[in-house]
Image (cartoon, rainbow, N blue to C red; front, side, top):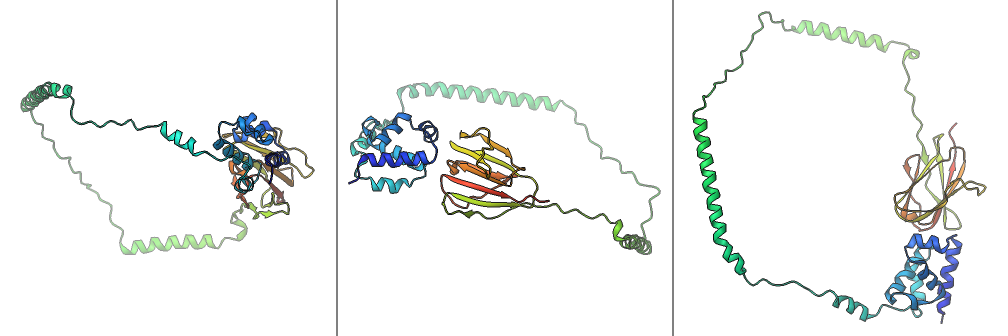
Length: 303
């Protein structure tokens, strides 16, 4: 049977292969560093409960790119399961507190006469106000509005006859024919703007890298919008860091980089589900849906 330390060793090796420290993993998973160390060491007694052991192991595995369900199934005999007692205890701690009202309270019955008297007084006041308004309007003289005067044009312009309309149409056609006879050199040609194109992604042999080709443009701007904790790094063909701030970014942050001078760029995403990549403000669709992946952009600059 596989021992507990084999599970911790496998998770730790996966973390180191991604280049994460325990502090990085704490930022990504939001699990306290001491619990992460406990998982790697197989020390589950320090966890708040067996339910959290499985939940923390699942989050750890997904953050380092392992199949959490497969991992838990493989080590199901070594990982403690959630106890039914914990579920029953959680349910017993939230009893229903609703009370059934059998009838109106005595206080409501006592206040009903006062409410009725108050409504009666309000009705009397409204009736007096309406009566006073009607008397005031009766003494106000009614001003009759006169309809606006209609002014007739004493010298109306004559309506064009059918002959005049025909002559006008012939003149317009003659002007259009003259414009059509102009030489081509005098006609301003529309300059068709070049449109960029990004090729469909090609998955490399390592399984973690997808290559794209950018054409039809002479500009190469990269933008990564972050919606959750994820590591972001950008390198050139010689593995030199192009991003001055390579680290784990949090939700709401945006990474921008002008890579026009490069013909090859590799973008490393620790958690691609929490990041969107834009090339010249065009969203780059991921060719494969994996958590940790490398995105390579080959830039064929338009001359």
